[in-house]
Image (cartoon, rainbow over all chains, first blue to last red):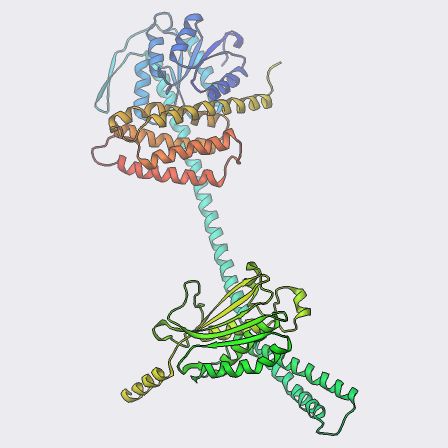
Length: 480
Length: 147
C-alpha cells in the first residue's frame, strides 16, 4: 500500500502538552518525511488548524484546558474540518474510552505505551483510509448504553469499523504482551527457585563447615592441653634441679656458675607460667575446665595475693594498696578466684611506670551496672543472691589504652601495642584467662581506660552467701 | 542535513530535564495549595491538575526510557485517580509519598545524582505501591464504583 501524496506534502498536527513527548513524536514522524506541527493543547490546536488545515491530527487525550475528546468533537463538527482523520492516543484502560472516541468521531486509537513502528503504521493507515474513503457523511445515529449512561454515536460506518478494528488490534497486542510477561514471570520464578536451592545448598555446606571447624577447634585445644602437660613434666625436672643447684644443695658454686643457674631457673619459671596459662586457656576452650565451688573467704585470698605481689610492686617503686569491705564467706572456686586476682594485679603492676599506684578494692554490689551484661553461651554455674555481685576493682595509674583497643583486649596472645611486647614481658594470655574464668562463674567484666592516665578493671562475680547455700543444701537434704 | 539520532536523544534528554523542572515546581505549588484541613470535596477538586501533571511526567519519562520514573509516576497517578473517584482529600501518607517522589525526581533528574534504577527508586516504588494496594482496597469497598 502506498500513499498517492508525497510525504513532505502531508501535514500532521501533533497535539501534546508534554514537550518531551511532543518532540519525540515530531522526530519519529519527521523521519518518514511528513511535515509535523505541534500544539500544546486543544485551543492552540484549533488555531493551528485555522491557520492551515492538516492532513491528520494526532492528539493526546488527557491534557489541561481542553482534552482530546473535546478537540476531536470540535474538529468533526466543523463542516470544513470534519474529514480530517483524528487519531487519539490514550491508555485505553476503560471501556468508556472507546465509546467516548466513537462519540467524538475519532478515526483511530493508539494505545499507550506504543512502539514506534506501530505509531507510524497507524498514521499511514489513517492517511490512506482518508484518501480512499469515498462515502458521504451518512449519519447512522446509533444509541449505545454503557455503565447506565446513554451515548449517541454519530460517526460514519467506516470510521466506526476502523476504530473498533484498531481497538481489537490493541487488545491482541496487549494480550501478546501479557503472555510475554507471564513467560518472564515463569522464567523468573524458575530462576528464583534455582537460586533458593543453591542458597540452601550453600547454607548446608556452611553448617557442615561450622561443625568441622568446631571439631577442629576442640581438637586443637585438646592437643594444646596434652602438649602443655607433656612439656611441663621435663620442665619440672629442669626447675627442680636448677633450684637445688642455685640453693647450693649439691655443692658450692662459683659466682659465674650461680649467675647462670639462676638464669636457667628464672627462664624455666617463666616458661612454666606460660605453659600453665596455655594449659588453662586450652582447658577452658575445650570445655574441660570445671569449677570447684566451695565456701571461700575472698578477703583472705585477696590479702594473701596482695602480700605475694607487694614485693614485685615495690621492686618497680609502685605503691600497691588494698581496700576491703566486709564480705561474707561466699561460694566460689578458690583457685580460680586467686588466679583472677593474681592476673589482674600482675597486669596492673606490669603496665604501671615506676612511682605509680595500683589500688585494689572489693565489695558487694546490689546489682550489675547497666553498662555490664552477662555473656551468653555459658551455663549458669552460679545464681546471684537477689541479683547481688562481688565487685572486685583493680585501678592503676599506668599507660592506659585507646577506646578502640578495648575490643582486642581479651583476645588470647594479644598485647595491644607490639612495641609493648618487648618492653613488658608476658604471654598475652592473662586477661583472656581472667575473662574466661569470670564468665565461667556466670560473672562479667568491665574495663575503663584513658591513655596516659591508667585503667580500671572491674570484675563482677555472683554473690552467693555460703551460709544460705549451706542452709538450702540442708533443707534439700531434709526434704529429700 | 537532518539531526542525527544521537544528537536528537541528547537534545531530548535536555527537554525532559526542563519539562521535569517545570512540572516539579507546579506539583510543589499544587501540593502546597492542597491543605489537609480542607473539606474532602474541595480538596478532591484540586486533584485533577495534580493528576494531569503526574500523567504528563509519566509519558515524558517513557519517551526518554526512564522506566523507573515512569513506574513511580504510575503509582502516584493511580493514588490520585483513586482519591478523585472517592471524592476524598489526600491522606497524610499519600501526601508524604508524593512529596518524597518530588524530592526523589529532583535528585535523580535535576541533579543527576543516581543511576536510572537504584535502591532508592525501588524502595520508593515499594512504599507507593503499598499505598496503592491500601487505596485499592478502600476503592473496592461496597458502594464505591469505578463508574
